[in-house]
Image (cartoon, one colour):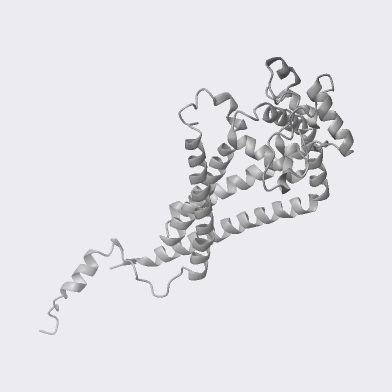
Length: 308
């Protein structure tokens, strides 16, 4: 009787039978490995980018719909680089994607989204550094490219309302006119001196934003730049020239916007460099926090697997 084998409890039999099976049990493993501080820091940080990107995206789409650009996209495909809303759409979409993946990855503890978020930030950081190195190494070619781009901007001034608003704001803010000077507006069909042949009132003129103190006027004078570059050959041009002589001043800004931009960059090079470093640090911190959170999630999942 003493040597009789005792019956094995049913639970123990199940434990022996399932000894080689691995089961998933959320909540097991005691104290959580995931830091709430890191988790909600990543989430809060990316909510800002999510909302900012969503706002830029909505504004860009609204601007395109207002201009019916989506309908005429093929006809304007060669001049898309002159449309200021397309960079807005690209930046908005990229910011929205980064913020969305960071929010979902941190809040839902999804390692796939966190990996995508870190990869996207890493690629963006590499692209920024490469662009900075390229801009410094090829600064002469970049200067020529910017000049050609700005010349195209002057030519397309009336072709896009957003581009027109951007140029007017730039000229009023920097108190400049044209790229290198007021005569650059002769490249534009509407302000060309040759437009006198079709009796255009804007012939030989400049946009109103070139007029001195135009931004300080409560009611803007949109005709102040008409004919200011015309030589006193006609009666109207002679009359305008006589008025300028009596005023002992030019009615428009004579400096170009590109020299003022270059001067601003030279005077604020330290500010630009510090801003770029801060942006890079923010991206590196985002990658580090996301990878730290991902490691915590994997460590917690490892504690969820146990043997019966």
